[in-house]
Amino acid sequence: MKREPIFNIPPVIIAVLAVLALVHILRTYMLNERQDVEFLLTFAFIPVRYDTSVMLGDALPGGGADIWTFVTYAFIHADWTHLGVNAIWLLPFGSAVARRFGTIRFLAFFAVTAAAGAALHLATHAGEQFPMIGASAAISGTMAAAMRFSFQRGGPLALLGRADENAYRVPAIPLRNVLSDGRVVLFVAVWFGINLLFGLGSLPITGSSQTVAWQAHIGGFLAGLLLFSWFDPEPKFPPVDDPAAMPH
Image: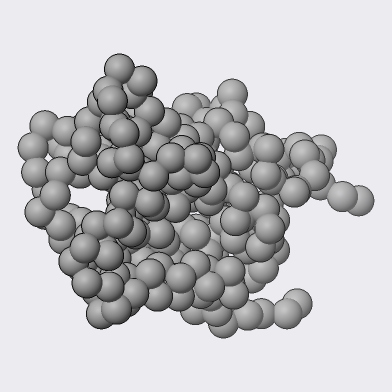
């Protein structure tokens, strides 16, 4: 059986990280203050843009910005620490999901979970003028998606240091059974607990002094959990721990 290095990062993850870094380099070293503000107004997610009761005039770019900012905000970060923390989370969870989904499906999944995070942020921050930036919602989506197969028998968490591409092909936990697995329940409880702390106070995890858009995290996570099967290319075989399901 062919083995691959455990730190062999999927090319799509390297590409996403490169884009995140290039965007931040552009903002930090190539744009002046006025240009950076214009950049944020054009590509960050700003809830007031969608408030028809507010007369914005030409204050915010319209047209396509009403649509693309649901995704483009995810490629912008407040500072290098903010970017670095998100990169650390994207590497393990994003890599696992990218190995299972493939490049095109992963990019579509990343965009959909980012948009879901923006949508929940909009629903809970209607009319707010502060821009939301960062890939955390989409990364939360990859966490939820990885949870659907990583705990399965023969999955990535069962390898104990071995790298095997087949680990990313195990049948996923059916959505109806997600909350019947104690490990998954613990993962969900810890994840939501951390985000609840984000909502109740300030945790110095992101590296940014800005308010954490924890509702967006939840939106991305729920989308990743509920929409997993839309993107999962794996055939829906019975669980591998069912003896009757094993090939003869």
